[in-house]
Length: 432
Ligand SMILES: Cc1ncc(COP(=O)(O)O)c(C=O)c1O
Image (cartoon, rainbow, N blue to C red):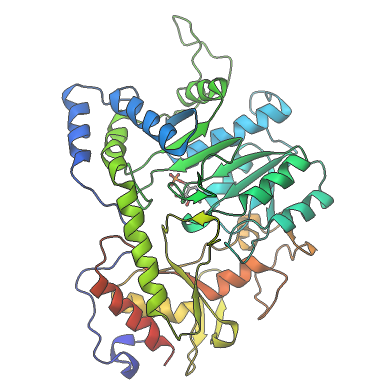
């Protein structure tokens, strides 16, 4: 790799002794108390006071009737999508998914955990392009998708990086076509849209307590719903679908997806700190924004009139005419440095050389080898399925453009303002 440490552009910058992370867990002490209590009282499995309490706390905080604690956000998405599939198409035969032979509209620029459960259930994701105002599912492309595939009845939509998407518009399109919404609020727990928490907009919604999230259980996830029947069903499925019989009686497919009372103890200890974490992340976002003044970059955008993000990750996007040449293959990237210009590869490598962790933007699903043959819909209609080529200035494919020009910045809430200023300085000098 190029030696950034001896590059005269970075003269005087000292490598961080301790790594500056993208986003790591922040423990406060109360977590230990609730985990210890679970151990001392021997409630260490998938039943106990911590689990009951965090389900209550999450439902109250978000403003939904029921929350069901599960082992991961991915498990929650699987059961949410299965639930929606069963509502729409009925219970499948054993060995078959609820979505077999069905298309499902899905966020394109997201973590693959959002969309993989569509395939777990036998469905085919039709990826919907991203809009530029919030970097989430484009309601105009979604409407276009219903023109192309009017039979579709399920939409899986994520809020990226803690920024609520255009959820009112997406809901209007869904209602117009009689479709259900599974809302992936894994990254946006605590963010609001028009004063209402994300996690309330789906027919069924999910959150994640993965280690890098706004609050964590080290792992864990939850389904959020207003239906008691749905909450009970998910709880049953998550504990191997046992019927109320003296023996192990099974009428439905089961899973081992329930949250443990130990994990719930960590989450219980984190809950009082959610607003603190959001305030810290917001301060990080604003410090970057101010620090990049005059550079040809913008921060990840949000709807300032209507939404309060949780600012989980700060990201930037480089102006088109300030991009140096960059090519990405399946595993590696190359770029050519140019005065006054930069690119995500250069910035990520330079930060890494100084011991600071950034990340590329989520590579859109339609560009992923595993999903390259799936349909992909942009505002204009059928997208360039199977393509991972970036066409500079292309307005047709927003997702690949943001992937090409954007990156995630170190957003750890334990990063000090002084450390962040050094990160900003490194990025500024990439444009020298
Ligand atoms: C958008 C999104 N969806 C789903 C998940 C899956 O959550 P988990 O890691 O808890 O399975 C994550 C994060 O990990 C995510 O970022």
